[in-house]
Length: 128
Image (tube, rainbow, N blue to C red; front, side):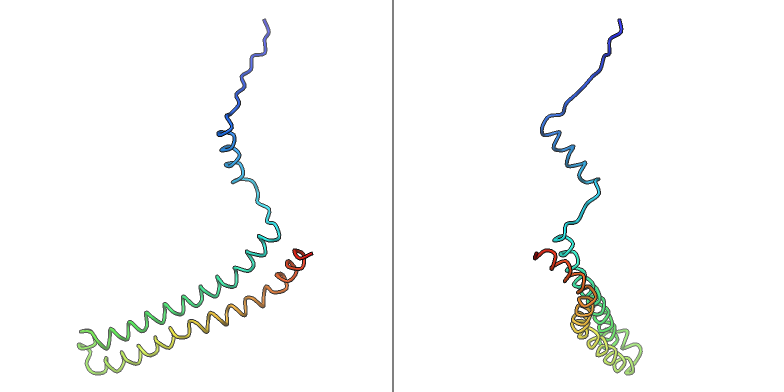
């Protein structure tokens, strides 16, 4: 009695779709030209935003330190020098915070110039 007993099971359509969706997550992704162009276009803005946010936040923190020295009991405990020092530090923080926008513009321009040849090459391929 040699019988090949085997068991086979087929998934329902819903389960089959779920299996395919899970499988797609683990397959290597191939970028098409448009996706690559979008990704390249986003890089300069992300870098510029990151740099300008860092400069702006640092400026706000420095300005807050100056305000703290000038207006709180910490400054009062240090005497009249703390008021002058607090105003100077606060002004430096304001200047640094005001520089966030020029830093954004400069970084954006610089990063766009770096990737310009690649973007132009991709746009030429896509427009054909």
